[in-house]
Length: 554
Image 1 (tube, rainbow, N blue to C red):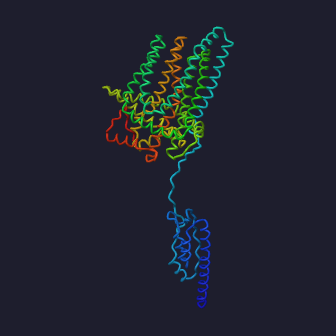
Image 2 (cartoon, helix red, strand yellow):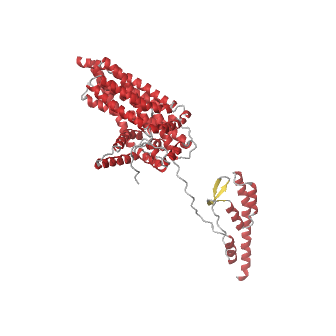
């Protein structure tokens, strides 16, 4: 057997030479195919072909073209081809095993690639806050049914009831319905005028709204008191108390007006890039006007039904919730268009954003409409109580405890959440928490906490409502004094709600400016307005008068 060993070794060497020649002839063909799809330059391919004289050199050439992040991926001119290690030829003999052991290096079979960051979905198809979506739709069905039934009762009483009921309903139609319908027309006209003025002259309008609301509410209160009827005097005193508080607030926030005007001017700049951005507001105002017109007929029909005061209260609460949902639908629509412009530079379709707000995000709009006004009102009350520092330590500690509770609730439910609801399709509570965490991470809590945009929009609604009260109450007092107090309250409610719907656009623009800046402070669309404000606050060069605020919980 020893005589045949050299012959076997020579046979094995001959087979290995043939395999190397076959590999060398196939490599140029593979590279030529790769060149047709754009693998490497021709000079690099020729260099690789010349270096494949033996199997060890061929492995070195292959490793030379591996992706540095994943050695098992071959770079093909911008593409990636996975390289699978070819089986090594078996060698039976000590000499062959010794020769290949020197040249071959083990290639790992699996190397983990670095994880890519999660991509945030900007087109979520999930419905947010489904429970509140169901509740609002159910409420809307019941409200439509109740309004339709009450309208039918009113018409039936007008046609087939006794003469006393007919006279009563005719009097209501003659002296009640025209005033409220005129109040609706006046309120929608004021709503368009306020929004247009805020968009054209934001710096002037901030000052004007603060003092105009004070003057109009004071005038409405004085007028109602001068009618010298118990009902109108009670309503007039409420207007006078509010006017005093409004005037004190205007004096108190005078130092914040300059920064608020700057933010208004800067945040309204993208509106010019979207000519149809105001269409959702127009649709909501039109729907609100039609619904209020039918709603007034239901109020008249309730006067002929059992427990009229209770039914009218239910109708008022239903109208308030529906109008708030309309306002927040317009808010979410504008927020999606503006936020995607800030975050991604996208030119979104306004009609598509409105469709999303009316379907997938309607549950969050319904939830926010229910709780945000209540939470903000209670938080303002708690912060106001902390201003009254007295000697009673028990009451003072209770006020601090209430403020701490309201601040904790506010972090889980605030109006800033509508931006992330519109952008990422998140639920209301999660969007509120994430947004407030962004403010805390970027040291923006003192800035957003002292923002008066919400107050400006609220006072705009109060101003419109007061104007409606002045006009409608004067008219009603001259034709039918008994309806003066009731019609004054209804006209104020209609004027306030319609104007709040119109002011959804500037409010949404300001919210997007703050929230999108907190998410990407280095964005090219942001200037140094917020950074300069933060610097001034840190250096204590400018005093911002704010109500007491508990430190964030750790």
